[in-house]
Length: 294
Image (cartoon, rainbow, N blue to C red; front, side):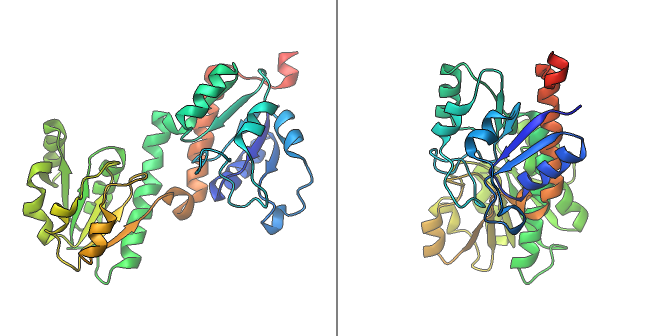
């Protein structure tokens, strides 16, 4: 027998996740999707949705304002404090990108929780739809092919690694920036052109597309002055991103902030990654259904 889950808010990934959990034989309750036709007759209350679940799955990101659950398809706001007050010590809430202040409160309340977005298996596999989504944006927003284009990837973390590999497979001339000499060696070994961060201004003028994966300011006004006006920047980093947007606008450099790409480009695949990660957490915590516990 499966577990009792509640999917609490979220985007298309959350809906697809729920379908996958149902397919696996779990009991499912959806809450926070009544703006969608298939879920507009939602009759269960927030109290019942939370209290009747063994596992409450909150979205990725958990919140966009640190006050309410991220629920873009809900006709009402779902206050985080109300949800926490309804959870018992026998339940667990899982969310993606949980704010530190809410993790602290959950600990103080002695409640079980886990941030599935922090899991390495989640981060690695989530990089694939992110990279594919970034390439989709580039194809839609530029008048040139990626093949034979000069493309720069800023950062060689999980997303940078996957993105560089796919771009090379398409036939792009791939340049990759890093600060770590070990990363630069790996970049060179895969056939990309390695660039140390201090040398960026020497390479930027020849680029057609720049993908940023670094979650801190890297493309400041001084570096942006090195860009040609027809170069496009696609910023994949979480807010506040890695680009001085005011300076880019002033210099007429087109910048696209592309967040939440897995949920937009490949919600089913993204949901499968979340599901597998959640199952790993449940296995590690030895969470069982009500029948097994008795």
